[in-house]
Image (cartoon, rainbow, N blue to C red; front, side, top):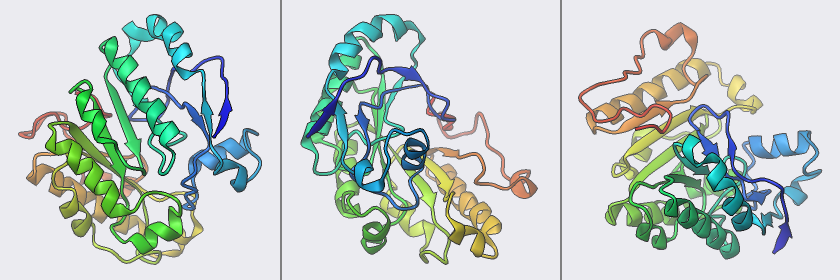
Length: 276
């Protein structure tokens, strides 16, 4: 596959639930059409010119060499490292990328650095053999694979994605799900409860609204829709003793006073920014 070199790899992210991150691939073959924020930013800053170029990923072939130099520099500052925010670490049908991601996580674990990963691909079962403090997640905004084919055209099928996460859960690995960017009913009619039931085994849930899509604002009651759907997620998390995080901007200010994001409840470690 296409390769490239970089001068640095590890960096502190400004993403609201992040710490340090690694984006060891440029581009993403999944070709999400929500639209994809990572693609919009890459195009804006001249890293890619077209969608066609974006979906032809380039792996950073000197990733492990960079890690050897950067781990000593950042080790004492890192709480965890996430793979990844502008690409996918387990890109569907790209075994070279999955292999590199596995090696990166293994190397970080050797210095007792916790890793977390999020994918629309398939999580390899070999991850269960690494540090048990790692956390692995999938993005899942629907269980309708027809919708997935339209908006995540080259990502993994939903059933396969869930199965790979469940297989890690059965091995005692902490798992999570990002239900974002969640669409409004004029884009697809679905019941959040149906999605949550499929994911009742996960330890953590992130929920966020769909942005950068004009169809959302065309839905007359979209603010109440996202407020109510966020409440559904919170109620499910509390009832089932899950950690959760509602992304900024999902709940509108006029209703946010009715939704409390507690620091401590009867549930263990209420999810705030992927921190314990």
